[in-house]
Structure formats: C-alpha cells, structure tokens
Image 1 (cartoon, chains in turn purple, orange):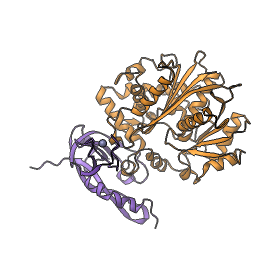
Image 2 (spheres, protein in one colour):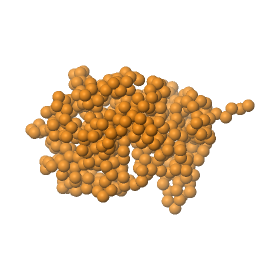
Image 3 (cartoon, helix red, strand yellow):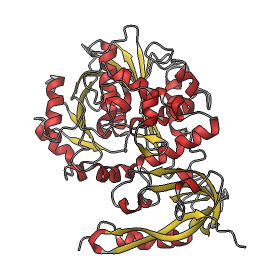
Length: 136
Length: 373
Ligand SMILES: [Zn+2]
C-alpha cells in the first residue's frame, strides 16, 4: 500500500473542503477563500472562520482534456470560477455536460469524490459545483 | 558599481531522452566556453526532486561543473526561478559580496509521461485549493483567456496572432524547440488542451540548460544588468481582485522605471508567454497597452520584430520552449547575445532590453533591465 497524498493535510482541510469555510477579516471586513491565518488584503491576524454561501454564479469555466495525473477517469474535467458574492472559489463543475453550462448561470456547492489515493484506497472528498437545481 | 553578463551558454531545447540533466548542464558549460572560476554558484530548477530525485542539487552542480568547494545554492520561485536567481546574483555582486557568480538553470520535463509532469506543474498554483482539485496549468490560464475574450469581445483567432508570431520569430533561433511556422487558423483548430487553449496556444514540454556568468568586471563583458526587481502577489487566483490583472508585475515595472529616472526606452521586450493569453495580460498590466487594447496592438504588428515594441524575438516560451527553472536564463542569455551581436538573431540598433517573468497568474513577478555595453 502506498499513499501519494498526506492524510493529515486532508484531515486538517476537510471542514473547509466539505463546508466551504472561508476567512473573514475583522479589521478590513474582507472575506476570502481559501482561509488564511492572516488577511491577504491588510495583513491583520484577526481572522474568523465564516461559512460561505453555497450558491453563486458561474463566472467562467473551461473544459480540460489533458488534466494532471490522477483525474483520467473524470476527463474531460470542467473547471469553473464561481462567484459566491462575498468570495470566489475555483472548483470542478459536476452533474452537467459542457454544453449545458453558460457564464452567469446559478450554481450550487455539493460534496463529491475528488480522487482516490492509488493503492491506499483512500477517497478524498471536497466541494464541487453543479447547476442550481430549482425547487418547484 | 556595475554588474555585467560575462558569458552565456545554451543547449538546444527539446526532448533529450538520451541526456541527463547533468549532460545538459555540461553542454551549456561547453557552449559558454568560459573558465572564469566563480565564487558563488546559483542553481535554478523546479522539478528536480521529482524529475531526477535529487535534493541539494546545487552541490551536485558544483561538483559536475568542476567547481567543488565553491558555495552553491538553489533558487526556486516557480516559473520566475531563473529571474530571481539573476536578481539575487545582481544584488550580491552590486553589494560587493562576490566577484563572479555562475548561474545554472536546468530542467528535465520529459523524464515521465506528460500527465505526471502536468501534475507537477500544477503546483505552481495553490497546491491545497487549486492543484488539489485537478486544476492544471493550462486550465487557470484558460479561465483568464475565456474571461478576457468575453470582457473585451475578442476572438480566439485574433489572440492567435501571438503564437503565430512566436513561431515566426523562432525560425531563426537555433536553440528553439519549435522551428516551424503556424498560422492563426491552425492555432484555433489544433487539439484542445483546456478550452479555449489548444496545443498551439501552449508552450512545449522541453529539456534544457543554460549557464551565465555575471561579474563585476566590465572588461570584455557582453551586456550590463542595469537593474533587477521582484515582487509577490496572492497565490490562489480566488484572492486576486481581477483574474486579468498582474499587480506584482506592475510594481516590478514601475520600480525599474523609477530606477531609470522615470523614463524607459526599451528596444526589446522579453516576456514569459506561457500561453497565448499571458503576453496580453502582461502588456496591459504594465501599462504599455490600455486594458482590452493589446490584442489590436499586437494584430497591428506593434509587437513584431519591426514594430514599436519588439517582443520575444527569439520565439518566446511558446516556440523557443519553457524549460521552467532555466527559462529566465534562456531569456537573459539570448538578450545578452542579441545586444552584443553574439547571437544568431541580430537587432542592430537595440540598446536596452527588459525581461519580465511571472509565475502562474502573477503570484511572483520579476524584471531584469539589460543594457548594451
Ligand atoms: Zn484584512
């Protein structure tokens, strides 16, 4: 059994990955994702975790036919830049074919399998976004 | 106190399956043909802990170049590693700490299948929140390219003037990896890597090495390093105010301008055009083009060799190739060669050149102002 990815790293980040936790700066008010211990805009260390909205707009996206190693089964991989209003997120776009997507459409976060760690068999989960399912 | 380029050596970029990284460094050293003993060696390389499995590469380089005993360090700042190696050497020489510094840039990107390399390269972006999600080098540039085309109403074919120009420029560069012409239509129609980026919008994966000796001794120098500067910006693109803006590079450009008395008269620009979109972002971020206007300027020939802003006259990353850790030193070598008339491509009236480099979408940025001797 060999492990390619660090388990402690994944474990530390899992809440951010599952629940989209960003950082909010108490000094300048900016919200950012990924979260840091210090504000990337003003340098303050007064940061509180904040759960980001789970819906937003798909600003732009790209369909990747030559993704990095480890994502072959998911090819083509759709990568989107999503605006959640208070912060932006880069993520895989799922549950949609490329021709069903368009810039500006509403999307929502879901937790999905990102990859499997080779023979170690560990499955890594994190956020992906899909077109917003309208409630009738 | 001045800092000068004494000599440079290059290998032809390409897929060197039968040569090791050390063979390539040796070839560059032979091409340089300068036995000046350095008092410091600075090595620039990104992927060697993966590609050849070696740490403390600098010591090994000191030994294989015949300079065992000389202090040696390695600089790694992603795609600006070579530029920052030059910056460090420039500052150390200018401060009088050293007299002669040997810069060695070397990279092997063809030791594994391309997908494995793409995974390594994706680490130039945020590792835990971008590379982790399977986001590759091309994909983040693709997001920028698509956003640029949407925001300013430009077509892929218009942007493709750039790669066609780079292939044209590389025809006369004997060290270039891709020495064949392409037209704008073939760029657009090539296989898609990450839409809208096609294979011909992208740099080729290559192996190569470059060596440069920087010195305080002005005698018989090829060119002068007039100034060098660097700056950093946020790493995740989601922290950027605007995906199309490169504020760190603007800081670098303005600092170099200030240092030159507020006025720059650049005869040759040399920029890191990783993908078709990248040079447009660079020109608009440093302000030689207004936002959204660089595509028309490029299409009007302003960045051709005969234009107002000759840029990447040796083919750029696009056609010369992008040997990552060695890229900044290829740029410096070629520029020093052109300014001194020792390179196969000549620009007779050129007196001053500016080399600009970015990592990723601008997390690290550096600039080197080079003058004719
Ligand atoms: Zn702040």
